Length: 442
Image (cartoon, rainbow, N blue to C red):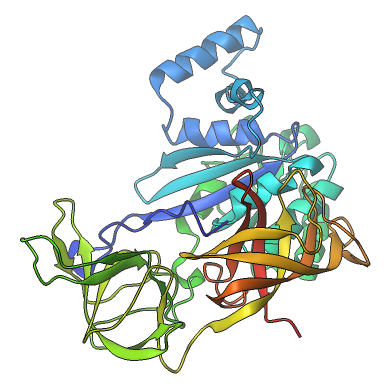
């Protein structure tokens, strides 16, 4: 899950360079006909993030199909051909940008058998868009999408009530759905939720505010995406620096350069800070922090915070290796070989107790054995079914694991990066579970 595929999101986010353009990761989920393809197409089209030849091809295909104007859904549905080649984890990533922000959008199918794709696409998202068809209101899959977003602790949720043109832009229809959605969000304890009435087809409230719904005073979707406050979503209290790479003194250019490279998972680290290296438990201090410039030269920075990729230099001769964790002596993660976690099962072969897997959490790898399945969750009702013997593909359940080496983790609700892991089937090398740590068992 968050254990792999992370990019250094803020490049050169250093005081001297001025603020880097922020990156917002968003995920969308929706079923085939609630307008998701059209919405994504509209965002790409209106932010000029598609190429002239793509647009020409879409206009051409639209004319051949007898449409009067470009069918924007064709921009995203072009991926169907790739999908039919049997790609298993089916998440398409789109990139678009405005002068204010860069966006990476993970687009996932909405059917029940795709819960695992949704979890994969949304696991690193800052914001999720849940599409609701104005004619149908809150459906079972709306509840499922919102539930997964809350389970993954996605900090911001947008409930996009689409196809308002098909209900005559009627305010009372929107207010009724909004009130149902508010009740749902309250039950799921979602922190920040917005409700936007729109017509992706006509572009109402997607990029520009719509004159057809003067009763709606809020921002358009793009305005909200550009302005939603994401810096405070990061955990800046708990210093967590998982070591990814040990840089040893070797080259003649830097005969005595020794540092530990990785991506800051949480907290703010500064030169001079007293730190603790786990699992050994040695206490030392930060001698300096560098970012590696495009020319390969280390440049010192005054502080490091998520999601910066940096090299930390430590005072004295400390034994540190890949998979170790640098934190503060008075604020440390849990170090344990027993884990209580929620998992979304991704594997085609079901999970059974006593099965063994490889586990990867931050930069640390070990082997794990599943001790018990506590319950399976019915996503529709939130009901916990205990006494189940297995978890099948797309099931979400609660399990206890025992690992061969201690892991250093925080509860997922405190830190998404140090609280998540993946399980890998060593015989096929396939990722079979995405996990969210609750804590130690008991």
